[in-house]
Image 1 (cartoon, rainbow, N blue to C red):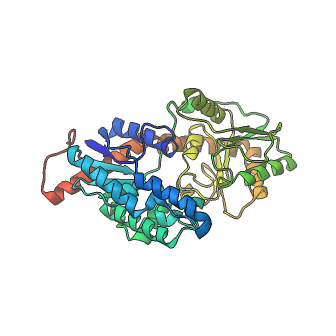
Image 2: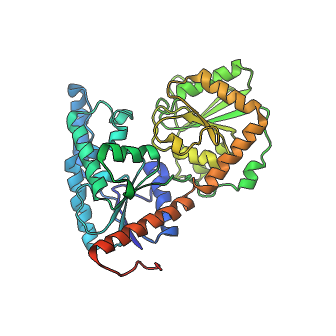
Image 3: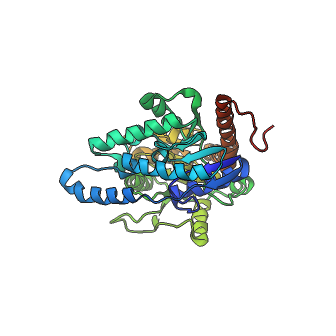
Length: 394
């Protein structure tokens, strides 16, 4: 297949969508066909609307989401429609591209991919809270049009899929749930990970750019409570520099690491390798790639049962999930009980790594997505009466 990769972002940038764009391109090229980039595309309207929104926000007291603007969507639609008219492809693959797809004009089947719907994150993520009524209207309109235009839709969690059906009337038959993979170039072997010797002290790892949203304060509470419970624990915080948080012999802070830099990428992977439990008491989460990366390193994952987390972390199998209202003391008790039970810890670590091998990797994602892409193409050809198979099809 010739796959038109439709996004306004630069898919070669390892920072785009936390590196997920880059790995999606690699997986599609390996398992599905020839990837034809249609972007990046810069939106002049988006830049102007964002600037205007920033100036007006102090007066209005609410946010305007330029990213889901109808004007921006129409601009993207025109630009990508013109590109597709000159670029023959069998199918369009549109990752987190509702705005780019909503006003697209093309007969080519679209496979829209996302980790959330606008309705699901509106009022859930801070950036999508306190929005103007106009923004809520535009965001829902753009999302609804994108879902309806798509021949198939792939979500990374059941949470997002249920929102598509509940909030936009999406047909269950065209929706798929396929978990994302770990953004690792060279994950360690299962044998090397599971053969690691247990250390006397418990090493907790927290990875997240947004300290507050990712539940950093609760992670810190858990660390302090573990000390009171007699567990010799340390916490390494990666990806942010929380204000007022001083490093100590129990707490290490590693600021943001750029995955475009091989040395910094290797530093992050070394931190995964030398940690025991992945702790992320997130307040709002669609589908954290860090969970997949932790699983690759055989780490039990301790997090919150919110958003799409339960589609990645299996409670009491690959990790522990706590209610959103749980605080550090509850997290600490669960972690202490797990750490003191060596056999249970080993079983959970093994299950986490197996989950990575089975589904939380980009090869598994690529193979599953290839079937959805071919299904979308086949469905379109049934409608048009065209019988020419995709290259490589039986």
